[in-house]
Amino acid sequence: MERSLGQIKLVLAIFLGITVLYLMRELSNLFVPLFFALFFAVLFQPLVHLFMRFLPLNASIAFTTLVTMIIFFFIGFGLFNVVQALAENSEVILNSISTDLRPFLNDYTSYVGITFEKGELRNGVAELLQSGSFWSASGSFISSLSGMSASLLLTILYFAGLLGAITQFDKTISYIIGDSKNKTKTLATFNRIKDSISSYIKVKTFVSLITGLATGLMCWFFGIEYSLLWGFLAFVLNYIPYVGSLIAIVPPLVLTIIDSSSVSQVLVVFVCLEGIQLVMGNVIEPKWMGDTFSINTVSVLFGFVFWAFMWGTAGMLLAVPLTFMCKVALENMSQAQVFVRLMDKKG
Image 1 (cartoon, rainbow, N blue to C red):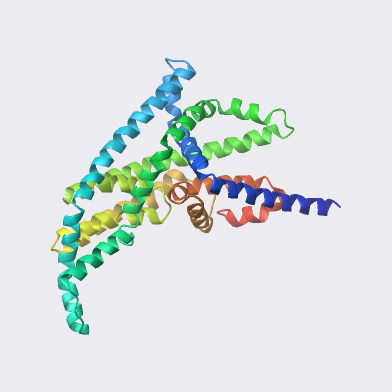
Image 2: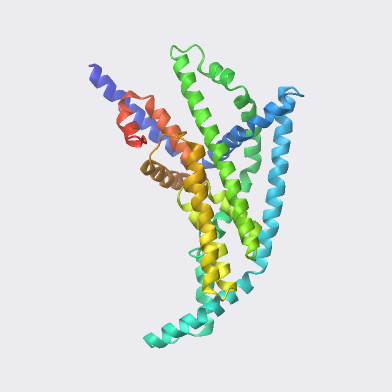
């Protein structure tokens, strides 16, 4: 009887999980701003404590929200100007790519015995660029970020409300769970999630900031156009596990190939840009991150694919902390321990 009851609970839990995931996908316009606001609230929480030395809690939250909005406004304004300049010069870049490809294409066509008109080459390059196969991780990613701005107001509202809850985290969680018999265990679980995500966001943001600055400065040093844009792109894409940092170097490397007549210079730029990503991603970040998330690589990759399917670009950015939250939730289900062991780094 007890075994049957346990199986029924497991089936109900699976059904409930599927229902929740379906609602999260269908109501992504509500959930995506909520999770972004949550992680921004964790990131900017120290600012609230700083203001609380001089101001009451509500005023500190208001000032922190205002400072955050100003920061993102200036970042967005600068990025918009750079992207606009890139769009205005897209025709020049397109012609440059076509011109640079012409000698290689002539050698190839003479070898295989086919003809390829100049106009066809240009149209082919244009179609390739527009399809996203070439700028897939930069152009389409920036377009996705622009699409997210539609829910900016909702994110700000969530952010202001969550700042107070995060600042008084223990009181908030104690009030929510009430006088539950497992109150101590539940509170410890929520604190573990908060502390781990807080550590991850702070370390990841700092590492991403250094990566973005280093990439932007390297692009500026080598005279690559739109260095500010490529630095910002490296900063944002660094949040995407494994593939983001690799994708970030593609656009500046392509511009280097267009503008440079020396293969050695292209190789030097590639080594420098890739070197930044490797050092920050494989040396600095693991050292600072430590064992914040005890999740193995396969689970992170699976989580990346799953959350990308759920929420697109936003899911890619949030994949690691969301996967960790799922793991902690499974740890508190006795019937799901096999999944916990599969996800654990020691497994």
